[in-house]
Image (spheres, rainbow, N blue to C red):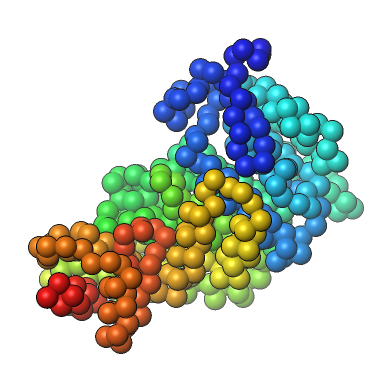
Length: 409
């Protein structure tokens, strides 16, 4: 590998190389080594999440696994931008990526760092298996389990979740999962979603939130099989991916109580009614509670109907964001603030542009004005990070349509 074959880039606090042949390519599996500039916000937020986790959960001497590192940019940024790291596994099955990781480690002088850096070229499941097998060999427990596991694949993460939960620290571990198969989770390919995530999606205006909740449900069920519970700390959507950060716990009584977070979404394709229901499928309505339509009533699930963020975790991330000069700094702040707003609101949201178009209104009012009028009418309302053109509210769609019509008048 010669320098003339490489392009030098900068992101966060680090410099890194990618192959010239990959520069400007549409991100795909055909790339020599995968790199996607649009995933920079993913890596920014991962830095904030790891630092927030380290502080709030009082975790020292962190052991981290970056199971699909590609060029190594995410791992290198973690090493530069996060604290309390003792050891990191930087893994990618691609031999070209393995060479690039070593080059980038040297470029950032991390080969001289006190952190133990282990670069591997393996299937992620094989790496997880070897780590846990090595842990079992140390009967004196001097070898502790990894605190943090990041899975960031091209497509679905489902193949790796079981192994990850077998490997991670069972109490107060941090699991960071990305899914880029949004067409599956958002209901464009519903049968594939049922096969991969054991849940039926819906291709509605709020399909991004449904997709995120299906992913959390899937993670929770696989965690439960391994006698672990999860607490969603942050779930966010951006561009073409969903990223979930969850803390682990080991208490079977609490795990059982968390079953209340499993349920379904009912959606009426006739009037737009939507609502969440518990996990008993026999209690789901057979007709729309608003318009009494039976034929166009549909559902999504099972999925996670509980809270998808932890407010103290997000507030910590917001404080940390002030200390970094990320190019996405303002967008991250906006995203995290909207996540706080939406956390206590009902599932689903309404895209005001689409709704005004359906109502044949001549203009779309400002979102802040709509929220203000909704609150004046005695309801609660908020923005949502899933769609910057949408709002959440705790009343039905007929009430929102009336409010929009009244504003127009």
